[in-house]
Amino acid sequence: MTLRQLEILRAVIRHQTTMAAARLLGMSQPAVSNAVKQLEAQLGFPLFERVNNRLFPTEAARVIHAESEPLFAQHAALEARLRALRQDKRGRLRLLSTPPLGHGVVPRAMRRMLARQPGLRITFDVRRLDEVVEGVEGGDAELGFGLSLEERPGLSTRLLAEARMVCVCPPDHPLARESLVTPGLLRAWPLIALEGGTRMGRAVRAAFQAAREPFSAAVEVRYADTACAMAEAGVGVAVVDPFSARSRHRPLAVLPFEPAVPARALAFWAVGLPLSQTAQGLLQELHAMLGNTGDGAAG
Image (cartoon, rainbow, N blue to C red; front, side, top):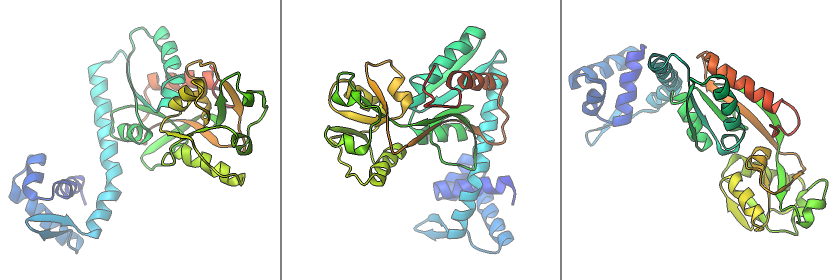
């Protein structure tokens, strides 16, 4: 099976008609139809079922499509890299990050890079983790940054810091006098929690379960930065990653939390694509700022 055959299969699956697939690929409709028939003959099983003039992929076609997607993601990333090299040979970085790293440590590393390389051009955006991953896999960015990313076949990763979640509250809060915060201690105060649908939100709930303490949130938020702002305003106390807790130099008490909830800071890029010297330089800056010990939020 050739890459062109996979491309045709992909287009028909996405658009459900050979006419629409032909327009996308710059081919004639008969050429697309013949290509599908030849591929089915080559494989020895059908790839589509026709229902009301629409083509719906068989289970076999869906498997082939899913297995081949990393190839297209890698190809798109390579094309984007080549475009960037053609556009600007002085040095260019395209970065994506989730809020915990994108609102603090990554901008500080960028500042150091720009001081050393005045001609450097940077494109930077802060998004949700799934959007950062899609952007890196699709070639929108050379580097992505996030917390506790699960392994993905299309990405290479590098650990920047091994951190743990912390508890935050106003400095004059009674909890601020504690040397260590546990779920049992939080029972007495309104809890600002990360949404249960987020990876870190699930991890905090699991810590409460491990401590055999009921989990009850007064407020649920999507982002740790929002939880910190609400804790600063006196709404309640929160368990967040240490990068968000210290990113804006808020007047907050930042306290160790147990059971320990890992918050691993990671950089990631498309597998098989070597990092540019500029990207490698940024990673060196981040390593110098974060080290790889403690809560990783220094810098």
